[in-house]
Image (tube, rainbow, N blue to C red; front, top):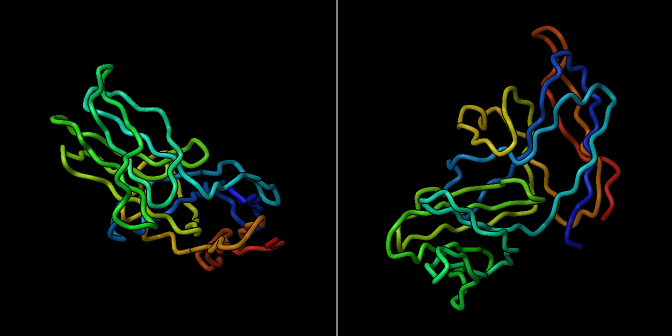
Length: 206
């Protein structure tokens, strides 16, 4: 099993046509690091559903100071990737030296000069990024099978979410061992007395 089939269902009383954001935390870094809006579900009306897939693997890519992006490379736990200068220019390649930890993936800047950005993608969408890695520095990534989900406004997929937005999102969903499930949103509604939004898993297949 390399991906989890998920189906978002809106059973809330929301009247603001709110957007729902899904993201992951890079557990190899400090928890305070900024997160990327991996998926944003928009215009999903009451009782509507939105199916999507959640790959368990992720891909890595690097961009250099010239604005070039390397092809996506599937990353497995314990692997490391080196950004090097070849006869054709800057390229990202699998390293013969593995990552320090068998549960992590590393992207190393092995260029003589010039900073790089290390990017992670899931399902072709930006999942995490580490910017301005100087020569000799590395980015370390590790993602557990859990997602964070919440209601936001004016956030687009691939955008960095600041700490104020992240602090409002406190629904954590553990997907470990799950093949497919529904993510059901309830709560919300007009007025200050309306309950908070909540997210629960239903119809779980393991």
